[in-house]
Length: 121
Image (tube, rainbow, N blue to C red; front, side):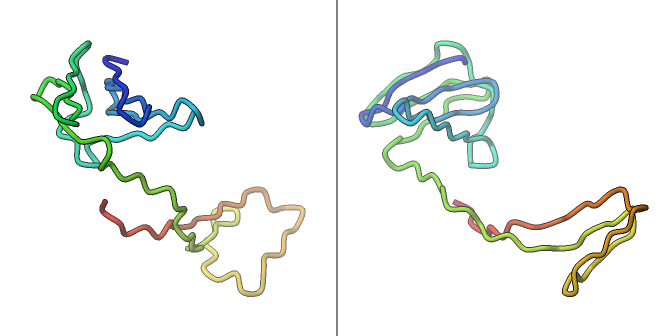
């Protein structure tokens, strides 16, 4: 952890070398934000934060990242899962409508699925 600051709701914001984390100290729940969420950089500098006009500003090797913590949206809904295929001892099984029968010689079952999440927030 490089820097830590609390917002007006009591949530803690931690700048690290792996992005920014939001911690709810009451529930103990963390949420991580990285370049995949819009940060310009994941590597922040030690003791480099400021709060100004409802903004939290963290310094990084590429400049300053600023945000209003009251407008940060965390998607907590689980996306639907869809079966894509399975492998039984290295052989692909695309349809499992009738189930799978195992014998004493079967050793490995791998199940593959996709999470259908198309949000870009």
